[in-house]
Structure formats: structure tokens, C-alpha cells
Length: 150
Image (cartoon, rainbow, N blue to C red):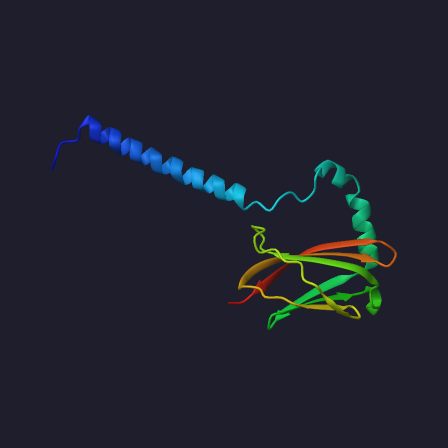
């Protein structure tokens, strides 16, 4: 076995730290490259109306149920006391929780309080952001998880 010389120690040290720096660079690049963006422009300003917005949304009494089967996505609203909710506007974002590459905004067909759309989702966990407006202009927003089995 050859003796351990200063050059070998230097080569081992440079290789060790080279791997560390290389991995850190790749991880930092991936973190920045796949970041989907900010939720709101200014968190403080958004927080000022949070309680009032939440109270108005709770007063609607809506609940949302998601179904996904056979490449068909269904968003169903249930209203307060069994009444059909007055959903005037619906916007849904379906995407992965950690990156924006696979984000989709389905185009829905409506049947009462049931909205359906063709949608091709790969297996795994999906984030669904439902934004709607009632007929009186009250905003509704809910983030839900959807799991598509493999």
C-alpha cells in the first residue's frame, strides 16, 4: 500500500469539498427552479382582511367534495342546510404541492352544484385550489388534497 502523502490528502480534501459544493449547487438550483411562486404579494396587507373574509366565507356554509375517476374530475358544492349553493364563478387550479410544472386549470361543465371536467392526472398527491364567488359576490377559497392511486 502506497504511503499517504500531502498530495493525496489535498486531492481527497478537494474531491470531498467539490462533491459537497456540487450537491449544494444542484439542490439550490432545483429549489429556485421549481418554486411555484408567492401566495400573496404582501402578507401583511392580505392579513388585514383575513378575519372578515373568513367570516363571510363561513356564512356561505359551503362545503366542497372532490372526485376523480376514469380521467374525469368532479367538484361538488353542498350548501347551507341542504340548499343548493349559488355558485356564480368557479376557478380551480390542480397541481402538485411542490412545483408548478404540472398545474392545470380545468374547463368545467355545470350541472346544478356539480362541476365536471375531463382531466388527465398522473398518480400521486395533487393540490386543488378552489376559488368561487357566490351570486352576491362573496368570495370562497379552499385548498384541498387529492390522491390519485397508481
